Amino acid sequence: MKLFGYWRSSASYRVRIGLSLKGIAYDYEPIHLLRSGGEQRTSEYKTLNPAGLVPTLVDDTVVLNQSLAILEYLDSVQAEPRLVPTDPVAAARVRMMALDMAADLQPITNLRILQYLTGTLEIEEGQKMDWIHHWVKTAFQAYELRLAQWGGRYSVGDTVSMADICLVPQVYNAQRFGVDLTDFPRLIAVYDNLQALDAFQRARPEAQPDAEV
Ligand SMILES: N[C@@H](CCC(=O)N[C@@H](CS)C(=O)NCC(=O)O)C(=O)O
Image (cartoon, rainbow, N blue to C red):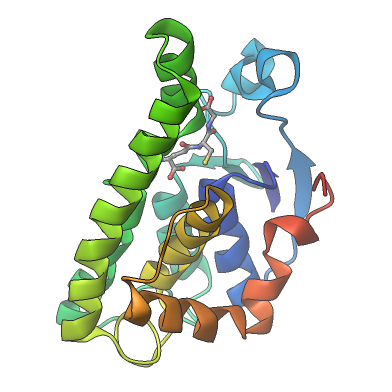
């Protein structure tokens, strides 16, 4: 398999964690999201992902976009360890919490939205940061309540799942943007438990070949 991604992309980070948990080896092709107006927006890259977003996963002749679809594909081609459980209730909970992060939070703090806010709508840098902090806290408040209901060592009980894979990159981003996370003790405890796992360490942005640190 070959992954087209960017070290700081949260959606790429999700796929890296999934591949890492399953022990699937892959080649990595960095797509720089900022250089030259964004390599994700070139016509060449859009043959792989018409949306002009990373990640893309290529498995032989199969080209896949959308990180959650990719994670479910990985479960289909290599069942263990499962990212989405087989139990219907647990699976629904995992998908709900994954979507809390991947559908309701990440898209509104994505690069192109922030660039539109500051570039086209000409909002100030401070207002952009207010926007990020507000939406991160809104999403994390909901996640914290879900953890009170369903959480354990990880997001849903004591088994690592796709929900955890979606949580970790958003916490990484929140910390990067200086969001105060003291109101979310359960979320931070789960995050710390996940960061203790080798698979999550290997997938960290700073551990990638294109990291700029
Ligand atoms: N729903 C997509 C989101 C993909 C996405 O938003 N990727 C971001 C990086 S995390 C991106 O490519 N941003 C480039 C841009 O906004 O121009 C997925 O889960 O794969």
